[in-house]
Figure 1 (cartoon, rainbow, N blue to C red):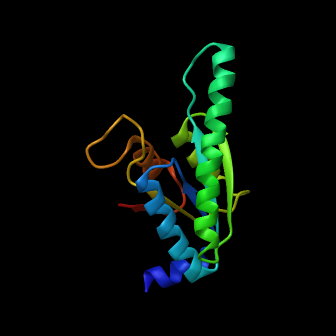
Figure 2 (figure 1 turned 90 degrees about the vertical axis):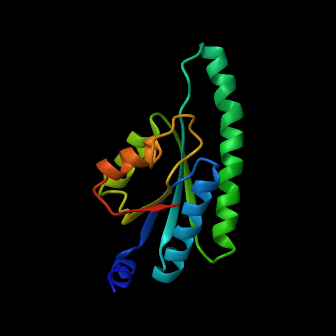
Figure 3 (figure 1 turned 45 degrees about the horizontal axis):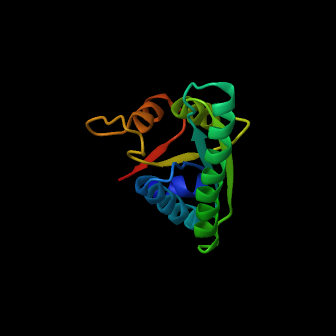
Length: 147
C-alpha cells in the first residue's frame, strides 16, 4: 500500500550512475518504478577529477567525458527500451555533495533517488559505499538503495 501511494506521487527520479553493476541495478529499479508511476528519470554522472596539472586535467576530462557519455547513452537506450524517458547530466565535483544538492533543490522537483549500494570507488565501507551512505544521511527526499 505504501509503495502504491508513493508511486502515485513520483514524477521525477534521480539516478546516480557511475558505470558499475550496482548503479545499473539502481537504474533497472528506477525504470520499474517509472513505468508504474509514469515518471521520468534523470541519470547523473559526477566526475571526480584528481588534482593534476592544467594540461593533464584537460586531457583527463576529455577522455573521461567521452567514457561517461557512452555510459549514459547506454542507460538512455536501456530506459527507452522500457518506454521511459531518461535525460542525463554530467557534472564534476564531489559526487555525494552534488547528488544531495540536486535532490534537495525544490527547483529540480525530484521525488525519489534510486541508487546502487556501492559504486566503483576504491573506498569501501562495511555496508554501504561512501557516496550512498552520504546521500542516505543528507537527502531530504526518499531514497531507494538497490542491492
